[in-house]
Length: 340
Picture 1 (tube, helix red, strand yellow):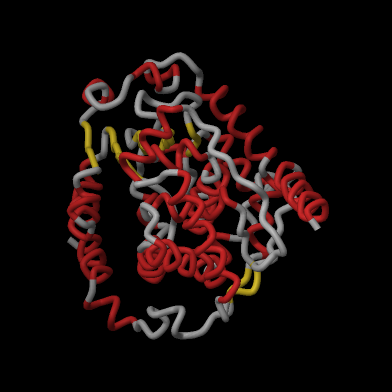
Picture 2: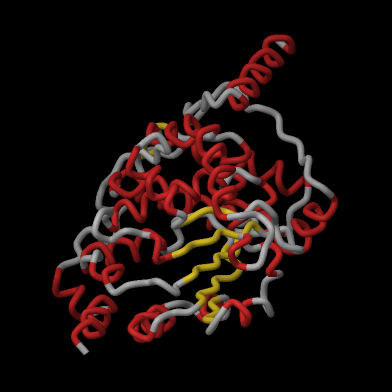
């Protein structure tokens, strides 16, 4: 029996390495996990997330038992790197992590045009990546955080849709989220808004804004540490004020608006930025390196499309929202911003 279990575990580990993801929600056994990061991340995990070997092992066991018994979940990844996305985001609170996974699986199925077919081989998605709209930077900051850089003006609103924009963000997220350093240390977003045009705002419908607001509400396992917006044009001031008004105080305190990149230097080491912004690695090289990562993880990301949860009104609490709800809520406020 011991030999059989070893064979199963070795096969599971091989499947993970080769990108063949097991979506059986209750497999006979699970691939073994070991914490192989540096002491820096081990200490950070203990101090910020309450994580140690015993807590992690116990949490993974409880999480897997919950998935196996869940009446609506049909197929789901249960490997440690995937489940630790949620456990670390929620600081190892089992109720909070399981709720987030349930919402994550739900929004993926309800909005497949945003979360399915995140394929770097799709010519349109590849063109957006090639444009330099969104990509991670090669080096982490001194706190171990991954920096995701965006140039809003590079998104061609005459060619691409808001759905494709969301798919790009989803693809970047899914390609990076199994990196345990980022699960622990979190992410920083830097957006160059110098060339942002008003067409960027016009591609959004009120329904899309409403639905996206529901999607990002406690559904995506990502530790957002800081968001920096640089050279935001005046026509976007009201929009930024509106967005800040609907964020929690915790998130508002993590949003920074800078008048220029010189001002950003007070928050981020400029040497970490692309060469065109004062760093050392050209944008083209950043994109090329990330595209290689996207291609290497392509099968793993696409396998997520096969996860499955049964959908009903109890799992989609916003299903009965009406246009009247939109007009009277925060989306109505957004509508007023465009009219003013």
